[in-house]
Length: 85
Image 1 (spheres, rainbow, N blue to C red):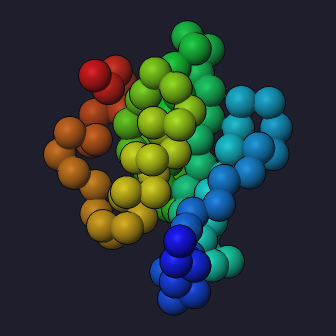
Image 2 (tube, rainbow, N blue to C red):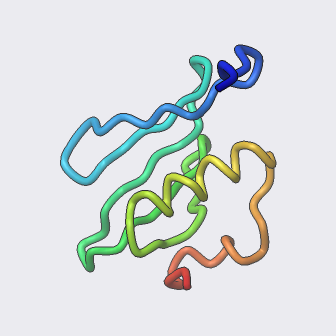
């Protein structure tokens, strides 16, 4: 198995409080994921803009990471109140 590239390290997610995760890559803040009262998870980019709502924190983390990778939000993630399918 090849070692990960040091120029493109993988995202690192840390639980900093119950229901709250922050993501970084190579020391750069990617965004965060927060559990909502209804039980879904909302992802936010590094500028605290909503990325979307998701059924579990893993999907929310992936969406925040994807948004950071692309540098823009896709149209289907612009409605933070809609549950992702």
